[in-house]
Amino acid sequence: MNRLALRKVLIYGKMPCLQKGTGNRTNWNYSKKGCCKKMAKCSNCGKSTTFGHNRSFSQRATNRTFKPNLQKTLVMEKGRPVHKLLCTKCIKTLSKTTV
Image (tube, rainbow, N blue to C red):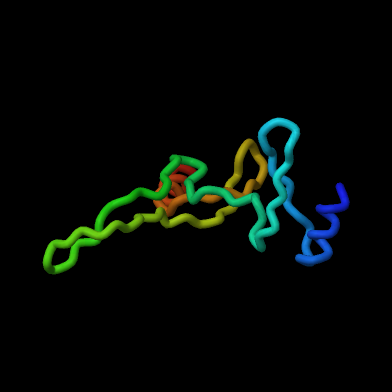
């Protein structure tokens, strides 16, 4: 780690999260949540955020997002327990097929 990165660590008080940059450069992320943000997406069916409109009484359309109901669940995969992020529809169908 170079001196500038160490100085930033001392200023901000947390270790930087290393991101892959273009070429030889590396980008340092000093956010609280880090750079390891995952998209809200079901690991079984791939359901993710969709976009639509709110409709008021006057039928004015304003943008909004529809997010899937994702839950962290423990699933048996190849005889081993694995933590996965699944939508509730997938949890329901998995519970039906395993019984």
